[in-house]
Length: 256
Image (cartoon, rainbow, N blue to C red; front, side, top):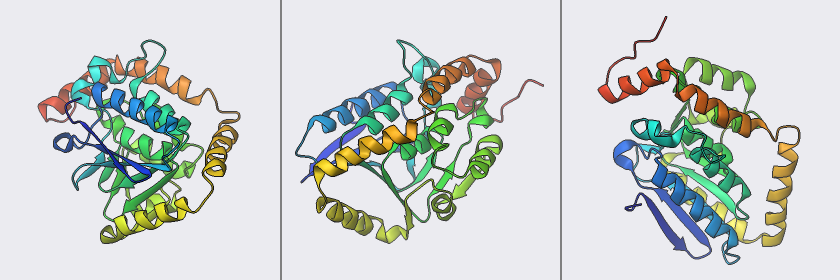
């Protein structure tokens, strides 16, 4: 994985840092595999209380799938699963609470990571966006996870127009737990972890499992449906054009 995922234990907390700042911490196959393995490892470690997920650098938390590598598998539905969907499942099924420390912009699948986390704290300068339609795709898996959490009208506007919103509005829309001044992000996170340490580990673990089961009632097939749809969409002419335009740093030429 060549240090694309930094794993550090700090007392009872496991810190996972997406370490591809040169490409806005975009997800590739190796990073996706590493994240899934790390969350499974955390889930089996009863000495851990929480996992913190963040991004290296100050510009980006995560920009979603690396479009330069996506044709190689990030949108594929092979072996019964999609790589990004597997990360979301690993976060949600992890028996430890997963907390997003959002220190920079979160786009596309990066918002999916935020949605899968149990708690999410963002610096006030952070922007959130779903730009997939601008590269011939649609945030299928991301919207599948956001629908139970976020104001539907706001979600639709972001997804259909490819627009972004500031952290203040992300909090009001239900996308994140709290928006805090940038200089106070780590202090807030420390306070949250301290409070978490005061609660019953068994109760919190049981509560996370119960909340997930209740939230998914009536919607168990959403993510499975979405991962098949993104695989189909990734093979279209417009998706290929979108990826080519991204790589060539030009505006896409859509098919009329």
